[in-house]
Length: 154
Image (tube, rainbow, N blue to C red; front, top):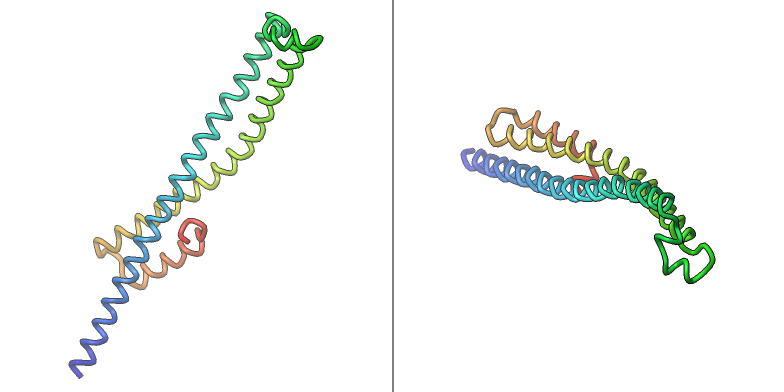
């Protein structure tokens, strides 16, 4: 009888240890994935600010100075080559601004989800570490997090 209780307690401890390790691994994975998303989001933010600014500046300079004066080498290659080059560059910067803006919105949403996932996992980890939650509650919360944020945990 004593041996049976000891074996059940050992299995319970091993099971809890495995669960704690699983929560910590999920937290680490979610942090890494969220950091990558944050980095990409920052890069898209820069592209989304710089591209339209560059397009506006280039269009303004071209209008003020003249396309053929601004791009002398292009103007010497063909008739109105400077103007064409200026228009092409403005169009490219405008395209980059549009595309980066679209992707930025998607990454904003994913970043919010990633931050929510990390926050919930940190809270769960704290509850486990301090022993403030019972195991049934803690495992239920972890299942809910896994269901809500599978792309950040796996």
